[in-house]
Image (cartoon, rainbow, N blue to C red; front, side):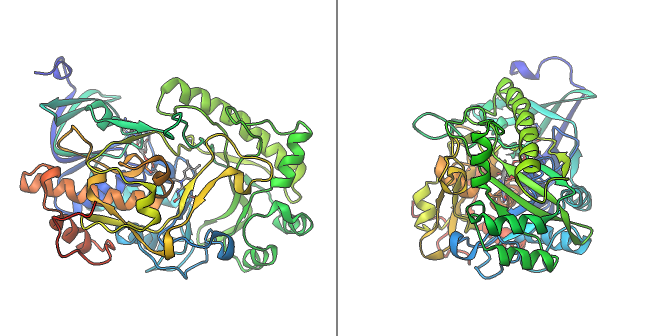
Length: 501
Ligand SMILES: Cc1cc2nc3c(=O)[nH]c(=O)nc-3n(C[C@H](O)[C@H](O)[C@H](O)COP(=O)(O)OP(=O)(O)OC[C@H]3O[C@@H](n4cnc5c(N)ncnc54)[C@H](O)[C@@H]3O)c2cc1C
């Protein structure tokens, strides 16, 4: 008996599928598994489901479509429907239900390039969908350890108010974002960029209220260097028509504030100007014109899967948010009387551990839109890798690396990126799947995390039902269930057991 099953447990339970993390990928994985017939448990460390979607205030799904021509057509525009949609399935169902509730901008059946949604509506909807599907949900419950036998994951240990619990399952999904389960079970992983392990920055998203954007548009007209994407007229027209907008990146004003000593360089940043975008959002079916959600990169050079780094990064992010609020009030017309409305409950974490799986997806696979016959999802998001060292004055959009897919094609995500090496009985979904640092710039987008979540949930349910290890499942079976669950695989390949990479 492994040491960590010794001692007393408040409960010992057995499930077909157990999902760790009820965030962006995890709640979808749990839904997909339950709908595929598995008795499913999801374990979430916080009281809110949704992860970055809700607690992180990252309230724009980007993107269910192929993302091309950033500078020409501004695909960050939440009213853009032109490019081909490539993520559907449960993600689209979530959008449809949000639209029904007045919790997302858009209409049912398809998604805009960015779907702006209300994080409060999302919190409610996730709970409701899990309840309808019969998923058991343990909130305020932290997965702390694993029990493995000969490389096969048998159980996880969960701590909560009621004590220590042993949770056994036929198959597990690690949707913790940080690959907590996979790493505890001995899977190899990578972190950050290859040369020095530096990751994309952490960002505490915040909201401001009492904003008068009419004045901001005037400011942008006089200071065109402050607007990175789209035209002032276009944004203003959409704003007046009650549609959501996103404005980036106030570069000139930020440079002025830095020079005047009014804006501190983010901790760990080698260069002063952070990525900075503001967006209007939706509540109760309408865009609220005087509220803005702010994404301004804050902390660089931390390992946000390390508890003490994370604590310090959160403290510093709050310092940075206060400085950012003062910056907007002092330097950006329209914000003179605005106030800090809310900060996210969770620091926004873009990148920590990525498992090394049976296949490591590379940036080139995406840029060349390589096709895989074991595909379980398709993506169209450009490689959007935020600067690991901070932006520079003069650089576009905070020093972000930005690469688009050749010929505006969709790329395939192979099943093998969900399978951590050296561990059996486990699938990984969300931002900790097996990709390289640059490829993560695409797969970390919420729609792709939802799509890998759906695939992992289906595969885990099949593994339980057929008593086959996830690694040995016939991929065509997974693909069949995914298509039945409305996932877009661009047609099922004819030779499912073959892969081209
Ligand atoms: C600031 C910022 C801006 C972004 N902007 C966009 C954007 O505009 N559009 C877009 O599409 N994407 C955006 N992204 C990317 C996207 O939001 C994330 O990559 C994605 O949501 C990650 O999904 P996930 O399921 O992997 O992780 P999360 O959504 O973080 O879910 C992980 C869940 O696991 C739980 N958990 C972790 N460890 C444990 C444990 N040991 N036990 C129990 N529970 C655990 C967490 O509490 C959380 O609920 C942004 C990200 C950031 C940080």
